Image (tube, rainbow, N blue to C red; front, side, top):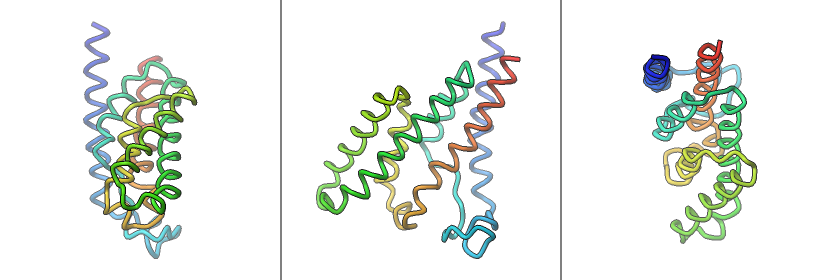
Length: 167
């Protein structure tokens, strides 16, 4: 019975969190966008991207808060490596997108494995940074959203779920 309850709660949390990320995308974030209190130079802050679905499934299935934070470490490592590879590799391999994407995902996976925080959807998020031309058109703030902004929302919600389910 406990497994059924956990399955139902997890499914509701995953679905609800993906809905929330989409909902957040429908409203402008005036304090964080152009002309706002903290002007990040963006037209608006985005929260949802497709890899968040796989990330939400993984995060809401975490059994402990430390396990959840290891997942977050994997995301941060993968994104950091992806940014570094894009920044340093793109000028050298600008005419070889397949090679650069493969190097980026391979380096992100290597860094996650060495860091003890391998989380496969994080590699998909890393690939999104390279593959999505609209994100790259935003300039350097593409580092923040929607990948990391949505991940922060998912981590907060998953932490609440893990704490409540373990209480």
